[in-house]
Image (cartoon, helix red, strand yellow):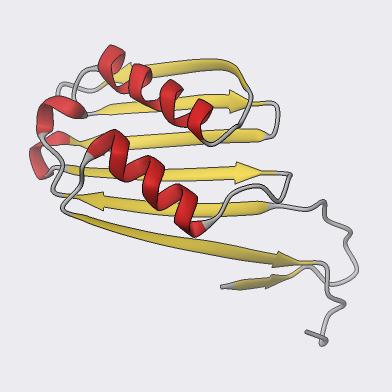
Length: 127
């Protein structure tokens, strides 16, 4: 997916979307357990945690970790064994392989899909 910003300058943005299916519900339905796992995941990815916040929906958790590089947000549906994550950074540090390994280790999903959005600074009409 590409986004042409035309004449409007944009900083470097690295945006990853992860969809994890088949996760054991107890791994993604407790805010404290989820945040512990996300904190380890952020450390494994060599990102810098600044602060965090969670909200419990009975069932399900939304969590955000503010990074010095930008942010990680996660939303869970334990009744479906599903976790959706967005990671946005302003540094070219993450890779598909690294994200796959970190999220697989953290949540042991049955299926993991990773997509990267591509924001370019192209002038309108040019790629």
